[in-house]
Image (cartoon, one colour):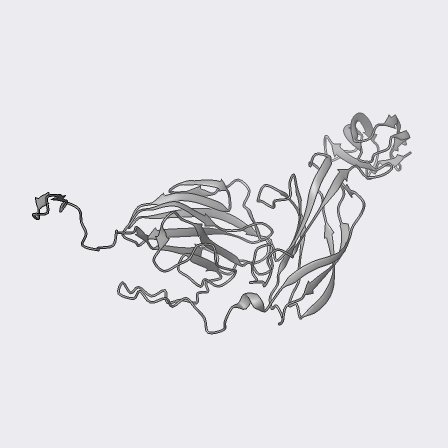
Length: 379
């Protein structure tokens, strides 16, 4: 302290120079590459996401989002691997990244689409990014360097230039979110969802925007335990829209409820543009949610399978056959018989078969000639 003669001590130890406090600055850059750039529907490839912090400060609380739902499935027998951080689910990667550091995310995918398009972006970080805004991108062009797309498509200057701090991420076309808007209506489907294939859904997809939405947009069908769609929900089918001019477009989907899903109540979620390829004027009006019941098929639904101990069927021998008979319906089957025409005319009486009940029958069949074992069921 110093005394300027006014009888009071003056504090000169503080810094009143007017200098601004240093604000942590990060610069996250995201890249998405693959070993199969020509991937086709049901083909597979390894996809690698690389994130680098080119800023002068550490980045904390970083969340990277790569939506896969309805677009690709993780190849059986493989896992998602990351070099830093952890996964909340296969699409959500959380990590901290020191200044100058990088990290990778690797996944083997099988494409569910005729033309696979992927889009990843940083959706959250605790610090300000010098040239990007989190969670403001749409598939399938990277407008900022914290976004990445497959196939490769960028609309910013991604050439290395340490001296260029200009924002080159804006286009001259204005805000595309005002041009398109998809909605779903007139949705018709059964009063309950049975454990069978090809359940028909009829619906109308409408573009209430101002211009044609060009591309193949995914309408995904899911069963969820709540009203929030996540990668943990059960995928039951999808359709592709093709180009959507302004107006209504009737569509039909055939979906399949997996046979191993528990029976009971679910939330049916139908989402247009589920992977957010399209920047829409209103992102909240393209999802349909309704409570549904997954039940057994009404009536009797018998399923038969056969396993032969010796498929070569040598003549003049005895061969053991195991029959598996399942009643997948919700009513009991009575007076069930299994017969073997063209063989020894054996008839096996099963009697009654309860709903969702399976019974195995093992019998020995003498082989006297060249014929096929063709079991038939009679109720």
